[in-house]
Image 1 (cartoon, rainbow, N blue to C red):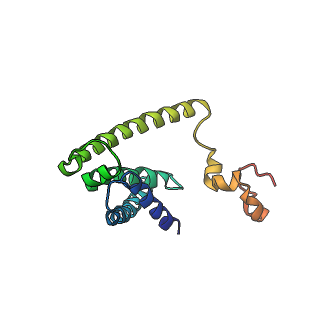
Image 2 (cartoon, rainbow, N blue to C red; image 1 turned 120 degrees about the vertical axis):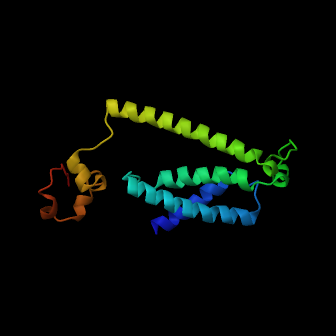
Image 3 (spheres, rainbow, N blue to C red; image 1 turned 90 degrees about the vertical axis):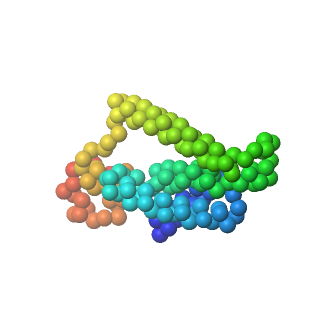
Length: 165
């Protein structure tokens, strides 16, 4: 059920960039493609061994990039005018808007890599970004959310974690 909900959320993320500039039927198409993009990104993260338990990078990253590309591919100049933008041009019809969207994606990726890298570097050098190996083995939820209270004491007494009941 989580994959279905995240697929729907990915569709909503993808259509956000272009909702004012595409036809309603195209919005449905963009959302359906976003669900497939989400699934592909989810599978890729699993294969690469990247831990993203909420699939946030697949939903917001991959589907967001698809949505930005779709805004340039499927917009119409008439809808841009209808949305109230004052400039009259043919950026959608000529493909210029798609190029602008690609430049925007590239700029966003540079910013995200730089800002995230800097944050992770500072965290790694100060408080650390990993938990103890025993906590990692048991599971962070089990330890920090005190999920052991639902398990018999005999089942976890051999683990090297500090559990308070």
